[in-house]
Amino acid sequence: MSRLIRAVIDVAALRHNVRTIRERARGARIMAVVKANAYGHGLVPTALALAEVDAFAVARLEEGLALRAQGVTQPIVLLEGVFAPEQLLEAARYGFDLVVHDALQIEILEEDPGPHRFVLWVKIDTGMNRLGFRPEAFPAALARLRNLQPAPLEIRLLTHLARADEPNDPMTAEQVARFRETIRGLDCAVSIANSAGIFSGQHLGCDWVRPGLALYGASPFAGRTGVDLGLQPVMSLETSVIAVRHVPRGETVGYGGAWKAQRDSKIAIVAAGYGDGLARGLASGTPVLIDGSRAPLCGRVSMDMIAVDVTELPGVQVGSPTVLWGRGLPVEEVARHAGTIPYELLCGVSQRVPLELR
Ligand SMILES: *Cc1c(COP(=O)(O)O)cnc(C)c1O
Image (cartoon, rainbow, N blue to C red; front, side, top):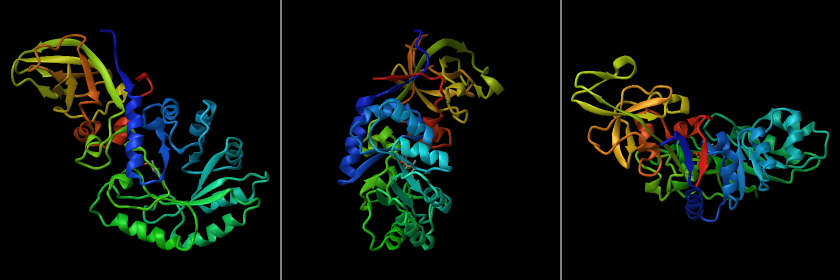
């Protein structure tokens, strides 16, 4: 009964998802995106379980250092590149590949006194308006990078899609066309697709794909789950019932009296709250899996507890195993009840929740 909240990580599911992505990616190489603590799944254990991918991508230098410290030998791409000369030295020492997305980063490379050579991923902004060279600025940027002494090990090109999770939206095709036009005539490896790009059904013709969410078995598309895409959920957020109460009709449960019993009710108190990263926006009615059956959340999420209406589940008792999302309860569905996306729920699992690899 003493098992409190933990995030169970299904390593076989992770590997299954890589195989599924490989089939979808039509021969493209896989850059596994493990930023944000591998979307809450644990940076190092996730990377170590993904020995078969071709590279890893992280957002911060520190994430790359943590991977190298644990013996990860694959290429590691810094998705936002470096921001200072000291970071460039670290990147060189640990053999990181760099995204270059603005002129300041080119200057850092030009002024690097050491004879360092990098694989450079030049980012082209095709409409996201976040990072990258606009098409009109790209040729000059490329020329400067080609003139670096010593020359880069390789120059590759990428762009990022803003609306690939909306398969009927024309913006993806427009971005891809702008990208192709900008890089016409260049003989460089290219990368376009995130998870949504990989599973959108459009053939984006990439040398590399950059899956994040799909690796973890979740779907970026509203209304479709990872299981619908042939993926398996990797994280199950598991806990148990720590109290059961009988609440007479007309009484309320929890802070703010936000839920009122419409009948004499059996309420399970479950050990999980916003202190564990559970979104406080989760509304009454959000499904929770107790003893394998769905039951609705009632009232507000507290720091360490939630209440669940188990009136229809006579077998529920203290110690009953509870799943907040994972196998049998897609994180996408739970996210919808919180008015958010699965990315935010997965990344939000807090540090106090232990990871358990299975
Ligand atoms: C985070 C990120 C990805 C992965 O996106 P998903 O939607 O999780 O697949 C890919 N490329 C870049 C540049 C990113 O920042």
